[in-house]
Amino acid sequence: MNRIPREAYVDQDWFDQEQSALFANSWAFVGVRSDFADAGDYHAVQQGRFPIVVIRLTDGSLAAYHNICRHRGTVLLEGTGNTGKAIICPYHRWTYDIGGKFRCAPNMSSCFSDLDRSAMALKSASVGIFNNLIFVNSDPEADFQNWIAPITDKAWPHDLNAEDVKEAAPLLYDMKCGWKVFVENAIDGYHLSYLHENTLGGPKPDENIWERHGDQLIWYALDEAGLRHSMPAKSRKEFSDYWTKQIAATKDKEFGGVYYLFPNILITATPYTFSISWLEPVSTGCCHLHVRHWTGPGQNRNDRKHIPGFDPKTGIISSGNWTKPALESGDFQTEDVWICEKNQRGLESPAYDHGPLAEGPGAEDPILWFHDALVKAMA
Ligand code: FES
Ligand SMILES: [Fe+2]
Image (cartoon, rainbow, N blue to C red):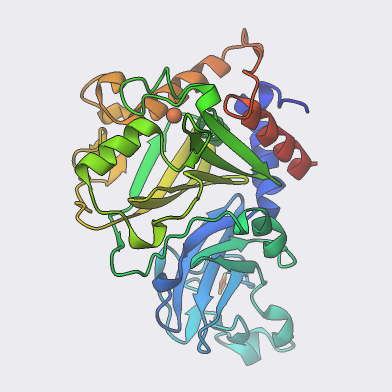
């Protein structure tokens, strides 16, 4: 298996190639089923170069389109909302129904006397649903089952609609590292005992394991008996001491603590919480991490002001707002952001050469698997 070269982390050409080739056929997280309660409810997302929108139709199903006007390409819908029965382009008011069909344009008879209306429908994209999570792919022929199948029989048992599960305020991290640096850190089992000594406190490389399932990975912590758990021993103890109530659906189930869905989605599942994070590449050296998370019974859900670097005015979390050193934050995510930003700065140096990776599925093998999948996907 080959590692990606230094250029992959720092070169604009590589970044451009990812944006148009990798993200032309990869699944992005859009939202959850309950976000789409009524016909016309939509979520617009950007996957690489592709603005995409998912809309609920009148029959309750979801459709995905390239979110660009067939006239001169203006992006149609932004963020989330309800578009009613029609999608109207703000530029010259070309109008589409929510099924994507072209309906009309102003001054049709004088300006577009021989327009082939059937050729002006919004271009289709693909939508996939798994466990109430909704994913989208800009390729209308993309095969969702093929992508998600490797993890379906080992998936998390959480039901996001259950009485004892509530969504908390979403998070947005603005980070000075490329998205791949963050992925590599997330799937690196070698750093857990060292960088996170003050927080997660492990596990050591032989006390945890990443399993490779196709291009997807699932992480477990191992105990002395070799049994699998979804949290490191230290966090397990802290949670059970502090939050005695577990999410009911997770009781007596074995599931992974982290699911990495290639290329840029991470799911963290514990008996007490559930979160889905996705990385939005911004530039070679910057990315955004979006997080939606759900908590179990008895947890404070919306208190973001204690997150290091959180700016209440913008709602954005960034290292520029930290008021104390990352290693004193008591927050492992802050430790990860700190190290990823330092890693990116080092990779920017022309003096950088790859050092060896720590061997083993609980160490740095997953980084090689990620590179393998990435090289395949970009070929
Ligand atoms: S670009 Fe959309 S109507 Fe002209
Ligand atoms: Fe980490």
